[in-house]
Length: 383
Image (cartoon, rainbow, N blue to C red; front, side, top):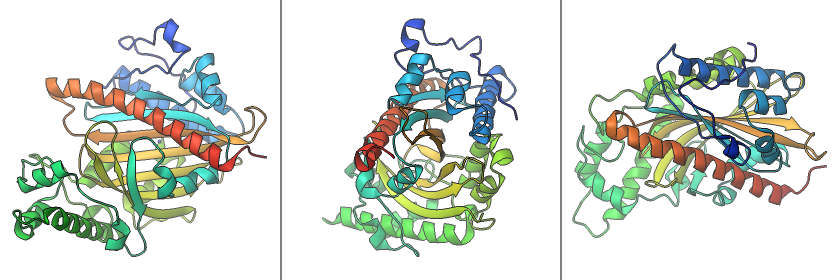
C-alpha cells in the first residue's frame, strides 16, 4: 500500500476551517501528476500507513498514525475511538482515480469483521448494500440466486454496440445479447438474467484458471484498456505495498500462481447503490494474516467486473488490535480504497468527479459506521 513521513497539506489544498476540524472529517481532495506536491503528499500518506502498520506493537501507535499521518484533530480521534467513522479523500495521480482512507474503532475481534465480510445476510444491513452471495467451488448458476438486472439496464443492453453502451461489457457479451435475447418476448427480464448469470459464471471460471489475462476489456466506450492493465496501474500507485506486503502484492497481480501460505481466497458477487445507478460487481477476496509481532489481519478485495462506473477497484482493510480504548479489547479498522472510474475527466467530468468524491467519502463513513454497529451488536463487549 520506510520511515513515517509527516503528512502536510500542499499550498493549493487548504485544511478544513478551524471551526469544522473538530466536528467532522475534513474532505480534502485533489489530483495531480507524478512528481508534483500532490503526488508526494499521496505517497507520504501511503508510506506513513505502511510504516505505521509495520510498527504497530512498537512505534507509532495507532493513535499516533491518526494524529500525525491522517492529521485528525483530538476531537476527531476521540470521535473515532467512540465509534464515529472518519474518511478522507487522498490525492490521486489522475482525474479518473479516486483514493480514500477511512478509520473506525470497533469493540470486537478482527475475526468477527472477516466473518462479517463474507456473511451476505448480515451485510444487507449496511447502507447501500442491496444483496450478494459467495460463490461455491466451482462456481454455479445457483450461487447467483437473487441477482437480477434493473429495468433500465435491460433497456440499455438492448441498444448496446461496441463504443456506445451504457453498460460495461466486453464485445462478445454484447454480441451474445443481440444473438440470443428475444427482445419482444414477455419474459425478456428472465432471458437477460439467465444470460448475465451464465456470463458471470464463465468469467469467474476463466479467471480462476488463467487469472487477469482472462478479463476482457470493456467495449462500452472507444479505446478500451484491458482490466489487467488498469488494475496494475492502480496498484502501482500504492508504492509501499510491494515493499511491506510483497507476497500479497505479487498474488494480486499473478493469481492463480504465487499464492502465499497465509492467504485464503473467496469470490462473491454483490449489488450496491451508493446514490447513483445500482451496480453489480464480481470480486476476488483475499484474507491475509501478517506474521508481525502484533498480528494484523488484512482483507484485500479485487474487483473482477462491474456493470457501471468502476473500471477497476481495490479495497484494502487492516484490522489493528488495540486495548487502549475504554480498557476493552477491540481493533482499529483502517481501510484504503482505490478505484478508476469512467467519466471523471474534462469539464463535465470534473463536475461529476466533485460529486463522486463527496459521495465516496460519505458512503465510506456510512459503511464503516454500519459495520461497527453490526459487529458490536452481534458480539457485545469484548473480554
